[in-house]
Length: 503
Ligand code: AHR
Image (cartoon, rainbow, N blue to C red; front, side, top):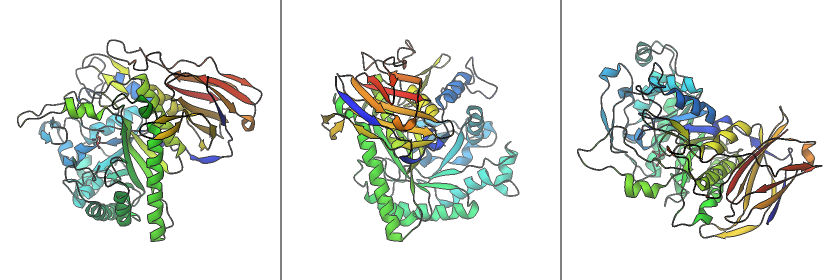
């Protein structure tokens, strides 16, 4: 059995783990909003038409800020359509997903839902088909207490208090040729800078995110960030990163190492942002909002799910309803490890998405809601990763991947909360056929007991939770874990994700 060794020292801090790193993303896409979070006819629906079973699962997931309403959807969205009396709201074509948007759920209803799940709102403005003025209008509607036309309209529409939205995305994936209103880095950078300055004139407390690349594999990657930040560096707080991973051509070895790609992506964007900082002689850092990340079988969407036809614009069609396996969840857990490893610069992130659409939570109309395999690494990490992220010393054997070359079999991160004196360790074993015995040197932590251990693994790495078998996959306590003197040992099964809480 291969062995690996890890040293944890609470003095080696990377930075605080910001709660915003456990953010989510709700887009008006497929059955996410309609037949997902909102289903007035459902037996568990509350007075506002929201499914109570979904609300409970979202709370259990532990999501902080939720990005809304898109995604690609936002680049064709007119926010005014989604407020005011429901009967008067227009039905619109959603060009991004070839669907009909009824606007039955809009800004007010979504904010009400957020109050129920206990999460904060992060809004994206449309810089695809709209511009600075519409962004200002939305900001006035959302954040001005009263005494102006648009704030009064919000009050008339039933919300006396301002929404007080802090985080704002300046458009979505403007580097992507698929994006409505796609622009060059130069054009987008100028528009984003103008819009950011105007938004800050209205509300200086907003935190703004400029669009980075839609993936590290875009042909414009790197140069896009440099040019956009050259225009916007003084105006924004964040540059975004988006990344989706899938197993391609049966290459499970590379897929399991997806977090290596995420590590490199983050480090390259940080280097680019810091280059612009140096050129401008700026004092501040621009951090990363990793506001779309997940496992997504995009090729399946491109080949099967796509809706076409001039007279075919369905409401809430089944789109992007990926069903996740144990292997997917192990990669997913590893992506969270990567985000936490970069806690000093990744200070906000949004899991894309939340319900039905590439989601940890699935629902059936009139039927149950259940947890996908990916639900568990998110809920457990969000609950246990508290305090400071720690720099670890890890010695592990390597294996060779087609995509990323030589990579370690084990990946890990730890957090330490000085207030509770609890330490959490998150681990993956990427080996497809061998368990790994891991020894962890915890001498500097002092006396420790294992408060919790959770391992997600299965003899069938493609096992999934489904409507028929909603509890097929779940993490189990790891009975192999032992603490003796200043060493902890644990066996990590092949293709597994593990979380430990030490107190
Ligand atoms: O999350 C699905 C889509 O992925 C989003 O709408 C878009 O921003 C990205 O390409």
